[in-house]
Length: 367
Image (cartoon, rainbow, N blue to C red; front, side):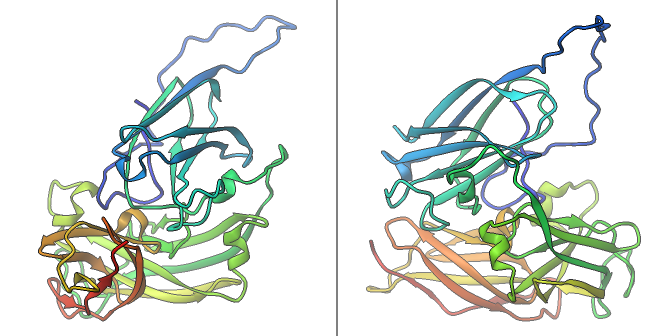
């Protein structure tokens, strides 16, 4: 099974696994090349299956394989969800040592084109440094990726990337935070920095706490167009884990601290020191807007956090979102049998590690 990753360390409702890009490749015997010989690049087969897609029963799913180095679409396939599953196979679709995006979407509105989430449900997987045949099985989930550009009419010419925004700064521990083994103002190595709504853009701070985040987007893409004169949330956090825990154990971590910073998206900016303070847990009740009855089966998604959003179902229509830095976020509530709704939620500063904030009810309408 080929290991898949997203740009950020784990999270939400499904765990796809972890890849170690620094792990050594298996040694191979080297065969001398004869003079004048034609060297063919090895190719490998691709198999892809989706499971747990009952919400999309009977809907078409388009799958695009994108070469990450050039932006060129290598293959495009359409399959149909049957009995909650779909699958496809491509012979010799992958070239050795190449890396790819595997983008796919369910055509929710049936118009035959990819529309940005949540109108259509769009996902992105990563295939790193192909060395053998790749066999991928992915589960249905509510963490979407706006990669509809992968399904547009596309030339075979490489897409030219342009860097539209750069942010540099340093992450340090806030003055009012108590973290075992750390002191106020101390630089935080391994802190996470990313920009709301822009996938595949996370960076981590070095030993001195410094970070350098650059948004490099294809010219003419939807995201690149949105950069002009817009303001976005730069999200930063750091987790101090209990001894022996890994990134998969963040939901039981000792402490998590974070901060957000509003930035103009059309310039290079030096943010200086960013002090991280306690994050908050937010409790939300979801109710039927007509009857007031509790709605008990919902997925909660935010473009700010993608798979880093940690949610819990508390029962009786109550939900909890953990580890939110102060700021305002647009959360998408997708509940079984109800229309999707987006609601802005303002998260206030926390006074201590276990602080919880209750926000107004979210009301959804039956389909």
